[in-house]
Length: 470
Image (tube, rainbow, N blue to C red; front, side, top):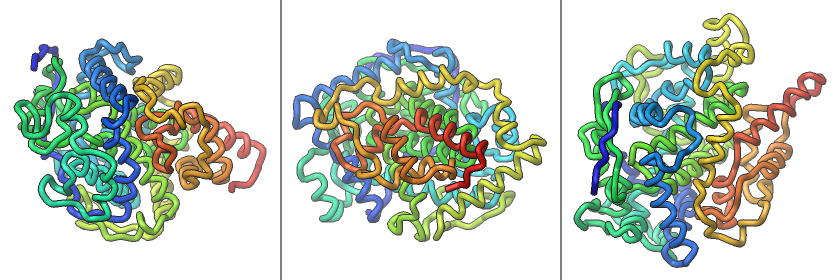
């Protein structure tokens, strides 16, 4: 591989993603939904998509793609280095999407002193973040070794039920497609080698990490800050996290819903910029997150009411020090967290959330720029794999009725039927590598940026007219 020197940037610490060793019902739902990935090498369309995936990834990583980024490329690379760290305990690094006033207050209260020690804005929000992360992260991690070599952890075979999911597909899709099969020189030990292992050239650069410490992009790929040499690529765990926590903040602060969708897209895209993930990984991580979050909001028994290990235990300065977390009524905790956020904003800003949300001098202040960037990340221009859904408008209510909760949780003036209709009318291009006509596939083409715009307008008109909430 040829490395291309860059300019300035930085980083800190995290171990490589740790896979889940158990396959829950939710995990199996996600694996079934992600399974079309394993069948890509079996068709000409799939092979073409894999070829395009490598090229698009390389062009974004090098800057040749000329994406409509929110920052000039050198600055976006610096942001990508900061985004290598995961603030999964309190979502603070993503809170800049809440705008200068609210985001600034949030980040002043919810901080990371080091990579493990952090504080939280409020108790209900801490519980909400902790539980949601365990669910979406578990689904995402379940896919890594599953699609790499058909195991749960690199060595332990998957259950018979899970093995059936791979019956029509193959493992190590990226490694085989890009000439770096598992165990070969330059690849990893398990499969699905990452872009920094498969691209013919990689732009590497220096700068500051999330904590302002001098770092290098390679520190987050080859170690010591994060060693991804033997960590399978698909799907992106960082993107799953970034989407999950951005959407939590979007739901809690509806006036910043579109900006938080933009922040989620940026965080996922930054994984390509730094050389850690392919475009397909980002799409896979985003889809996994939205699918699980919708089921949580619907109080699906397979997703709520379980005792989960908190992925980042709150420190002694926080409101909750429990090592486990469980939520029996997910929407109720969302409601509690929103009340806490509104009280926090009123105290720190002096006005209500909607008024404070408009105060923004950040990179998310331009709606047109946000929309253009999000659009560029919807499919990354990857070719159609499933022609049967490419020209078809999929009925969200029929295929994924719980999806509407992604809107009604933020805009309760809408009914679930109205929300699903908006998601249907605004959905993005079909036929992508995950859009095989399944419920899960629907989530791969949701355009929540456009949908939130319509939902917000309808909700505002109802409030102005004094219509009751639904």
